Length: 483
Ligand SMILES: *Cc1c(COP(=O)(O)O)cnc(C)c1O
Image (cartoon, rainbow, N blue to C red; front, top):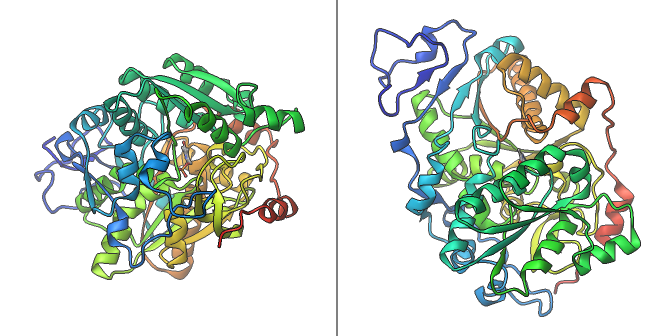
């Protein structure tokens, strides 16, 4: 297939025209056929997109917890490489992707974009459903898009060791993979609930050469404090972040790496949306609705920010939906306030939708979505009215994920099931209203390491945790006072 041509999933290539010309290749097939749009390697994006350049109002500053004043690059230098800090505060629209990073991306990027015609038919919807599939990466999710960049900049600046947290294990395995490529030692604090529930993810992290510690652990003050009060703590991302930060800050040769939430992480993920824009061109279509699941907000931002930026520049309208778990609903039930990113209060204060930094979400299966806060940039866009948010319980999202797997042949990660559920609901709304809209969602990872969750679902053993209103109120009462 020539560069940039849309390629079909069926073995017989479409005949009678040159791929890449103005023929809707989907129309030539049975209506029930899935259509796959792949981009040639030469179309791999050359720069990340920074939405800060296009916003009608700048996001609030990051504050020093001691002084209440905005932090400067020097305050963050013990934790992050300087290139990463500069990206965090940059307002340039495009940031060049280093060639060394692009050459690693080429192992799996550009990723495919599918038109889910079989799902459309099953739902009898006039909606056109598209999904970008990030499960083809070496660790099965979008996370390596930023892990590779972070490991690269760390290596450039002479760092020897990276510390990090991981929830479900997706981020830990991505950073272990990237650290291995650039010859860095990686220590991963893994939330206890996932450490026990997901031994295969732990095994993958170790296979890539990193060390895994169950969090809370005895290795840090933060961990020991939690364990002395709650010996059976199932852990949380907030606690694991405290431990990883504590393990990095005092050591010259060590930096801390975060897998979501921060501006630079969201920006590294925009290769997803940039590619999707080219693929939607190939499909000769454009999304009316964009959907992504949100834990810390990075895969959602990666898909949507390039589209939101374009809508802002062209004063066009686009519906954007962030989907979160009902048991950890930061955007739909949290307050928009300055809060710590971690439980032991070692990080700067960021303004975000938060359930309180000491809130420990129940151990539901979408481990990647168990974070008390939302990315400050996603929170800011929500405040500006640029996106909608909704939440679902875990049994309804697993029902949607299984339906999707049976029709489309890809078993989504439990996190991604939230986006699948919202997509199906929107497609049904299109049917009921008799409108044909294009929906594009991010299928941010596959669920092959999450089979216990699917086994539990099939056996009827998944519980829907209610949103813990009292615990959240308690955690929110401890929000830091900011003038
Ligand atoms: C980590 C992860 C998430 C949640 O993180 P975001 O930063 O919100 O994207 C969602 N899905 C998958 C597959 C993940 O690995």
